[in-house]
Amino acid sequence: MKIKRKFSNLPYKYSNLKNSNIVIVPVPYDYTQTWKKGSKYGPIAFLSASNYIELYDIETDSEVYKKGIFVAPFVKINSNSSKNMIKKVYHITKKFLLKEKFVTLIGGDHSISIGGIRAFGEKYSDMSILHMDAHADLRPIYNGNPYNHACSMYEASKKYPIVQVGIRSMDILEKNVIKNKNVFYMHNIFECKNESWITDVIQRLSNNVFISIDIDVFDPSIAPATGTPEPGGLDWYTSLKLFKHVFYKKNVVGFDIVELLPYKKEFCTDFLTVKLFYKLLSYKYESKLSH
Image (cartoon, helix red, strand yellow):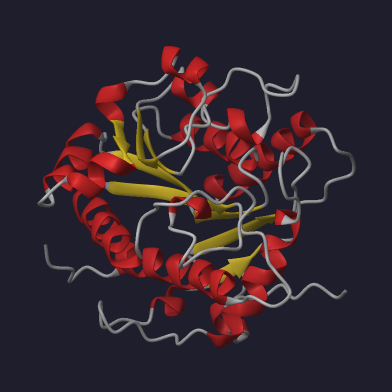
């Protein structure tokens, strides 16, 4: 299969590296996935679905593609070694950060985040992480591998403040690592009668924020195509309300979106992922956002 390396077939003016403010790093890796594999095809499905997105965003009254969106070469995975993959992701992410680009990563399973976070953390010493996920991902080791997708936030949790949103599944061993004051469990979000939890999320983040989004943070009714779906997730507009506040109040330095596992007969999750990506960029670059 020929891999298309353009977002939404943008003309060269808006898709070459020199003119682009934004870089997408596609990482087709899913070796550590422990249930259904296939998220290595996520970046391809993402770029394919991008052909059908409207490039004008109604909410922000903007066309963020004019900031330029460059799609980097797919990260070449020559072995199943997650350690080697993470090193590659780290070096590639760092290369584009040194070029002062706004770097985004598309997975792949959640283990790809480890390399990206290492690179961002070197540039932003006061960085915090907004981790959007159904799962805590704080195991020190899983299936004999400290770089498993179930361990994607463990290393980062030892270095940076992490605020976790949407969590509704975890192992009891993770209770020794998890910081409950920084965890917004999904059942608590559901029971909250107002939006005070969003204010609490913002207050727990530092000024520079990296966002890591596992697609399974969303309810399977709107995002079924993921490797480990969990019932009772976030809906679309609640998620956007949180993201909009984060981008308005903080300096979001980059983000990744992982665990899109495309199905042959279901394309809504592919498109949701693209729409989410474009929304986040619109929030990043649109200066007229209201509270």
